[in-house]
Image (cartoon, rainbow, N blue to C red; front, side, top):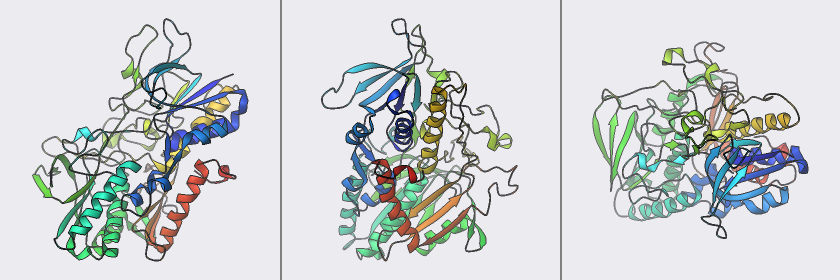
Amino acid sequence: MARVVVMGGGVSGHTAATFAKKWLGDKHEVVVVTPNSLWNWIPSNIWVGVGQMSKEEVTFPLAPVYKKAGIDYRQAKALSINPEGSSTQTSPFITIEYTSADKAGTSEELTYDYLINATGPKLNFAATPGLGDANGLGEHTVSVCTADHAIHAAHELAKIFEKAKTKRQKILVGTGHGMCTCQGAAFEYIFNIEHEAKKAGVRDNIDIKWISNESFLGDFGMGGMHLNVGGYTASSKIFSESLYSERKIDWIIGAHVNKVEKGKAHYELLDGTMNEEEFDFAMLIPPFAGVGLKAYSKDGGDITDTIFAPNGFMKVDAKYDAGAYENWKASDWPKTLQNPTYKNMFAAGIAFAPPHPISKPMSSPNGTPITPTPPRTGMPSAMMGKAVVSSIVDMIKGAPEPTHTASMAEMGAACVASAGKGIFSGTAAAMTVYPVVPDFEKYPGVGRDLNMTSGEIGLAGHWIKHFLHFAFIWKAKLKPGWTLIPE
């Protein structure tokens, strides 16, 4: 009997664990280790953050779902990996610390035959002084990265709307560091704020501004896109600028927020100048880092640097020595997501270390890097989790090496970005991109297939996003037909 241990119960980890159990059955063990008791459909947190959904609508308890599926669920935090075992344990294992109320603080060595790192990111609020505490609930800004963060954001936003009835208010939304990813979440949130301000009748008394580390609007950490829009080709820059302009939202781009104080964000621009932006309400996405796992050899030596990149994400089958931007290729990106040193370990979703950014790297004259890091969430994350576990299942059955691939340079992605919730008044920008990582050798000039890279905005997109909310929660709960819903 083989044991597959999945670290993380988010989109990638949950996908991997549920398919592993479906395909392996009772002949093998599947164990999920995650510190969270609730599964969260994160894309809908932006609606929680404007008071249009409750926490209960975007989360559900994991324990009953895993019990029904026959998955061994440990509500615990993974602390370290011993991929060679130890002097007292012959099998490879991870050390976990329980976070559940009944076992909180107790630790255990959990052995594995195959390990999937799907831990997701550490929300690195500490990278920017004043951005937020460890829980993302700082006194100066709010966040929508978790359901609890979003509840707090909605509460603070309601106060702003009330104040705007008698006094002009300033809202700032975007990225809180020069190396952030997830511009998409902030992109959705700012447009939902604008939409809700109109509904509340206070839009004319609120100044809304976007601040981002992107060098141009519509970069999204993917170097921008050329979109097929209504039969003609437009850049994501023009597509995005039109959205902001139509809604009278100003923007600051190429910005590294280096400190946040009460009512004020300090930032450095790509031209090296230092500036300040005042606000009454700010939602700034923090940068991501690895969760801080350590790794040890059989004799107890620290091999963390062997398994993990300096940012804390796990090394996989990527080309990490590509060098300068001019040398970057789509083929640098990992395919099997297998760790090159320990072949029974894989990483999926945000947990794997990218070989380099997708967007062109930029720095200010002061040497400050101001470049979006690669997005690895949502649809690509789920596809990676499924591909990794497909390989593991085949390897358990005798395959000598991984049998499935999930390169971001060979996969497409669909994104439906809400621009305001409402059955008849809501809108959303529906975008598809193929491939996620541009391949300029295969698609000269634009790097992507224009027939499969498109963008539209309208009410229909909102209906689609709303439908997807229910479809993916249905899938995650393993309801009848869940395997028919695509990743």
